[in-house]
Amino acid sequence: MRILTKNDYVDFEAPIQMTEEQRKKFVSFFKNLFVDVKISEVKEKSKEMGKRTITNKDWTPEEFSLLLSPKTNEELSVKTERSMMSIKMMRGHFVPEFMVWAKKKGYSLPVKFDVIKEYLKEQNKK
Image 1: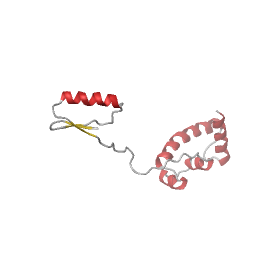
Image 2: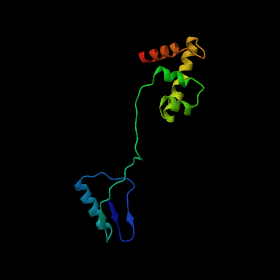
Image 3: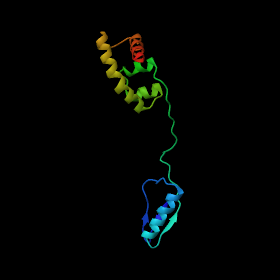
Image 4: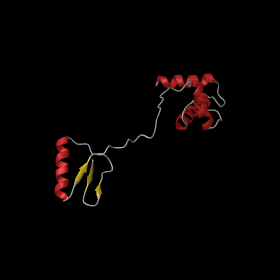
């Protein structure tokens, strides 16, 4: 809803949710507050920007092994078909935790694929 006063608009930044009765009281209040008021309905704009696809697929052991590689985030994004943000977030989470675990277990880089599977198996048990 957009409320027009004599020379200015009174427009609220965000929609105000109200029942029809509350709306009538709200409009009445503004009509008492301002002499010349015109009320018109306005369709709210969508907050979405374009088409989005959200994929919620699990990470595979192969993808986790790629996170330990020296490849750039851009290369991993293309290879795994995941977003750059997804790669950055998982690298920031997985790599430090895996390195601490590997050090406790006596492993050092480069690790074999079976070590990553062992880590993932232990993490799923928790």
